[in-house]
Image (cartoon, rainbow, N blue to C red; front, side, top):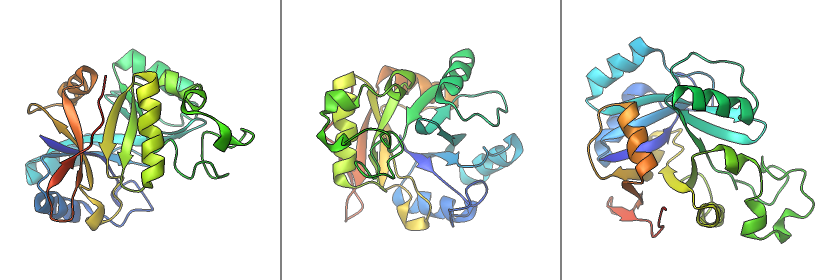
Length: 228
């Protein structure tokens, strides 16, 4: 089951030009079975989400990419309509209370420059080893690390992969799609079909999946990255 775990649309992400109909068209074109819609501002309401599921025939989760003091974090499985959370520790408490699954996304984007969200206060972060980088407290709070993101450079993704190896954390992949052509570029391929967000979380926790990137001819090329 091929799932893009990181997609933004015009419904809840001002920086996206991907409308829901275009998302559906793109998903069908590249052979996706499901998408996790991770808006910046607010998750889709239940009525819109269910209508899109029925119209698309896709497995669809409505999530959110939270902007926190420890970078951007996607949380699956939140049942409450939480708003205004800015601290990663507070988000963790909510996730634990509701059975949520937290993913730190693009943790090394723009690293080691001043625009990187995790290490702006660190003197000469480029001198740190992978083991030293993983001492950042955010990695203790999350369940998984996004290790393959289409909007990141190869070096940024490789740093995320090395951090996951050092920590023994699960790694996931998502396109971070904001446009039609970005949908399905990086995917998480589940070993079995799931029908709910709870089942998706179960598969992620168990590590019953692998990661892949869509090649130039449209095939999905597995990432050589062993999750624990």
